[in-house]
Amino acid sequence: MEPIFHDLLAAGGGHAVAFYACSAVTIAAAILMVMKKNPVASVMWLVLSFIGLAGIYVTLQSYFIAVIQVLVYAGAIMVLFLFVIMLLNLRREDIAKMELPKVPFAGVIAAILFFVSVFLVIKASTPAFEKPVDALLGEPALAGDSVRAIGIPLFSQWLLPFEITSVLLLAAIVGAVALTKKKL
Amino acid sequence: MDFWIDDIGWPFIKIFIIANVALMMVALLVWAERRVAALIQDRLGPNRVGPLGLLQPVADVIKLFLKEDLTPGHVNRPFFIIAPALTMMPAIISLAVIPFGASLIIADLDIGILFIFAISSLAVYGITIGGWASNSKYSLLGGIRSTAQMISYEICLGLSVIGVFMLSKSLRLQDVVLMQGDGIWLFGEHYTGIMGKILDWNIFKQPIGFILFMIAGFAETNRTPFDLAEAEQELAAGFHTEFSSMKFALYFLGEYAAMISIGAITVTLYLGGWTFFGLENLGGSFSWLTQILIFAVKLLALQFFFIWVRWTIPRFRYDQLMRLGWQVLLPIGLANILLTGVLKLIFKV
Amino acid sequence: MEIHIAHYLIVAGILFSIGLVGVVVRRNAIVVLMCLELMLNAANLVFVAFARMHGNMQGRIFVFFAITVAAAEAAVMLAIIIAVYRQRETVNTDDMDIMQG
Image (cartoon, rainbow over all chains, first blue to last red; front, side):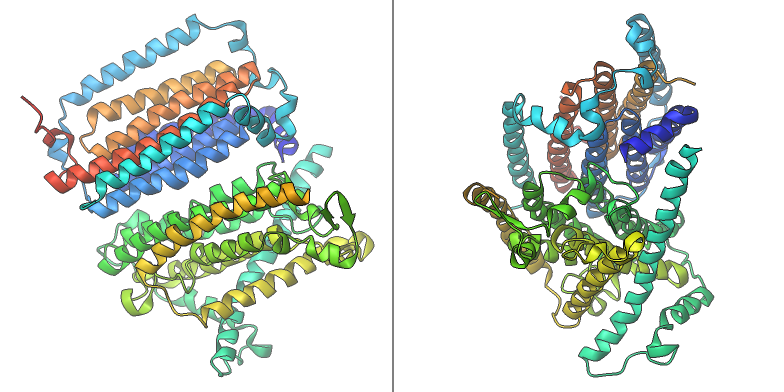
């Protein structure tokens, strides 16, 4: 798939089209997620945003990360959120409790933060930033076998963090059960 | 204009062929379900529309099209409308990476099986959102039940196939198919006799994994004995109580499309995919037709098994379902991975 | 129309800002948690973009770990929210003020 997809993207600026389409979906869905009063609607918009983000990862040739993004975020974590919302049977958030005075304040903070980050990107930009993504290093190891390329360092160089992650997951399972169980 | 032929033309032809074969199979399954149910219950089943009643699905769809599309006033409209489509989509999309023949694969992804799991993990939203948006007690209960069930059994589904990929050393589904049926490797020797070829199918090399995968597959498709989400007797059809006309039809066909997709994955992973001991090369330049036929026959045999189980085994109770998933299947799945690793070292396969 | 790494960084900046606004504005603890996830994802996007720029795997492996940790974090946070809901019958962050002096 990768060669076909890549040729398709490279031909006629397809890469740019894919990038702008996925980014537009991701950002629009994220904004809607924040704006919706209904938490279930928020969950569904965030799922769409994460799928769009997976599309952005595909344009970066990170197929494995893209699939993990959909599998773990959209398919598992967000289902958990949805499940909790249904379990607590939350309906519409009280509009009066939105505390409107905070909205412009948050907007100002976000705008400042955004412009600072853009400024830093421009300020810190090296020639590599300005190179078109298509012209970057070809990553021959990645083109045909991305699972192998991510698996070998994961189980050799990064083995200890990997094992520690499993302990962390175990701690999370025990913690979640201990917190939610009425009687242990 | 190689670009247009190779990158646009062929993929579209493949999508056309595969989507049509899959949707035809769905229609055939709707008919087969009723006929097999009748066979098991010693009745005749639908036999009036067309030869053997084969046109019954067409009649059903026309009936459902002409029915009134009722949207109750108390539902959450946008979600109520998209929910049925959300169940149908993942089942169809996951067919994109399944090899139906040597070249009949829409996208030969390096991350094949992960793609299928990623897409099918989205199937839960259709049922959950449908149950929630209906805004009625039975539907919500059905939706919550199915969410818990599907995320529990997804883990088992994922664990059960790891053994297969330990043997194939690749997540590409075409590699998994080609690895099966060319003779088994034991202690560094290659047995290419007919027994060696038969035993090379993953169903014989991974029997525990196969059984786990089938059980989890039944749970993922919400079929008996795991149909707690719709349980007619307790929940009045559960998540799709409030749906009518084509919205109901989408849920109904979505269940069969999910069966096709789980069945196609099983055939690919455990039953040798489109190969059948050399028979797949018959027909020269039309061998793709032979291959898709082999695949279809295997798939239909498996679907018969699905239907057979549905009309034989009663439904689990909810606590039984959860205990089976977490306390039985999960440990067995983990033990299977360990066992596969140990046996792989001993037999040098 | 050429896409640079800078484009990806700007998208990540926008997503991070949206997430931050959500954390500050929203009063529903579950939605606040979702906005936190969005901010985490913005950081992940930066990692993947730089991994692409350098043509190595480290950024991607870091994202892999970040996603795993995020899953653990979400499970524990939701358990805390359920525990709080049992006690106080609310998920509104303004009402969770029992520790206030």
